[in-house]
Amino acid sequence: MLVWLKRFFLGGENPSASAGERGAEGERLAAEFFRGRQGYEIVARNWRNPRDQREEIDLVCRDGEVLVFVEVKSRPDTALVPGYHAIDRRKKQVLRRAIHAYLTQLRARPRTFRFDVAEVVTSTKLPPQVLHFQNVPLFPKGYHVLR
Image (cartoon, rainbow, N blue to C red; front, side):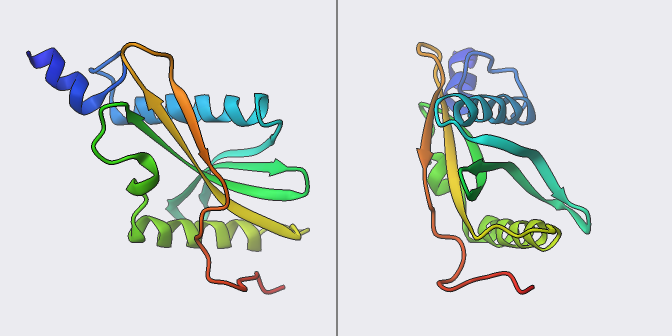
């Protein structure tokens, strides 16, 4: 019974794995998904704002000419809240600050960029699945980085 409860709430095949370990595995799987199936170039993983280490971008990718910022959420298939909806208002504020900091430190700024969400769904019976949500609204309309 206890093992079932751990699997129900924690998910995945290793219910004793920490949230950090599950998150790292989810980010690795998402990076493989974007590099392999999508053909993206991975520019950075786990980029942190030098001024505030709490601000992190899970993946920074290049999709042709577009710079793509990706938030990765790992969830068991039994999770009550999907990863896409787990990005609340506060998390979006942190992501906006981190992405703004990343963009301002670039010498050559991209013409376009977008924010995507990768939800890695784990199961005890099936291999992990990556759900990709493109161009998720994060910035106000007309946002651009001042030069």
